[in-house]
Amino acid sequence: MTMTIKTKLTGGALAAVLLLGLSACASMSERERNTAIGAGVGGVAGSVLTGGSTTGTIGGAVVGGVIGNQIETKDKK
Image (cartoon, rainbow, N blue to C red; front, side):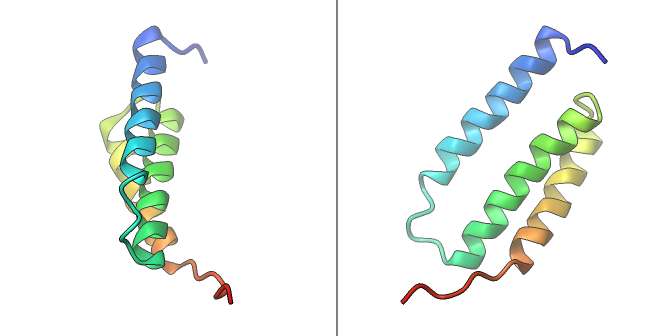
């Protein structure tokens, strides 16, 4: 599978937007943060796995968001 320049740039842009978006997560609850991270990672993964398909990106974001929402971490005391 060869990746075109457009696909590489799209993946890089998605990663940059994800990083910038996550920097604004300071006031979010842990569950909200996990949901956002899961959606971002799922969207990028879906895009890469489907060759940049919009449906794959959206589907990956939805699945990643649901998984991120269900993840619970132990309290740090």
